[in-house]
Image 1 (cartoon, one colour):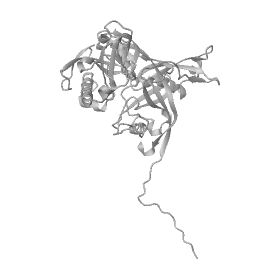
Image 2: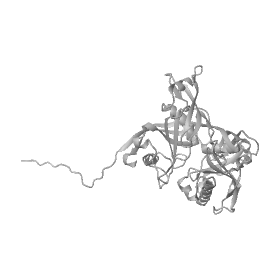
Image 3: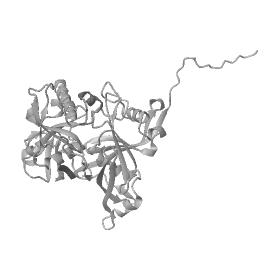
Image 4: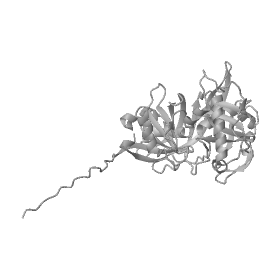
Length: 422
């Protein structure tokens, strides 16, 4: 008896699914933000250059666009502070160690904003560059003090988005095997971050080009036309500044605020958010960033909008009491259409530059005197920033801005992305 055999034939319409591609990645907290860090040469070849493939790859990594706003199918956490990507590479400029490229991923739209820097994640760039082996080994070794078996490695960063130099002072130590390691744990406390870590001092060198105006309207204070934005007035006072990141500063009272708002006070109010976005768009035109307010939709990372008020006591989002006697002023700032839970690092640069320039609204809120540093209150607590500005050939320039942050690796491994996503 002959036994017949049958061979399984796939159905004609059976879909063929793309495999996943794995790419080495580091997940880090820097300041009060989190992001996914990549070494440029680890990216798929077509993603190693700017363009649609790179954008689509990073969007899929983060989990955007997500109409649910949660980024569940990616590494983003549904907030502007955690929807961030970084690409690092060996420095291409003399006297620098690493190139740093930042991408702010939009949560709801298929868009990455490459126009500005992330000051918070800057705190993680030096440490990540050291761990990725992007800093010259001799420089790393020479940063160790033999007597203490620890030291500070000065990592010179070229910020590619804004073409600026940033210096990160990263603490390092010798482990039991005699290998230099980044110190990540410590007792430095940063408001907006739950656990203490090692302090990383950051210096933003010449954050404003000598050929451009730190105050793009040539005024320290402008009468800003806000007609049609939903306020009860057509004009308010504003300081427009381009330091760290283009920022619009206004008085809290002119917006109907106190300056002690927390995220729930702003982010749950769609009418308030619409007003602030309309003001931001008009401010972008006033600063020369947009030709028309409609262009603001495609550039939500810049400008930032912030409001200031004199020092006052309030309860931070953690319940911590912030005493007016311990701060110089209060500041609140919007990021990607939401009130930031603490303060963006780049906006902190703008605050430092404006506060240390007499005549601005920020300096006025801090008391109006000549200042070299200020401690300001934000939704999560306080932050101390320093700055040095001067007037050269009729232009205001910020020579240096400094602040302390912290950073920590959360995960090192591989991220998986469907091959047909990019």
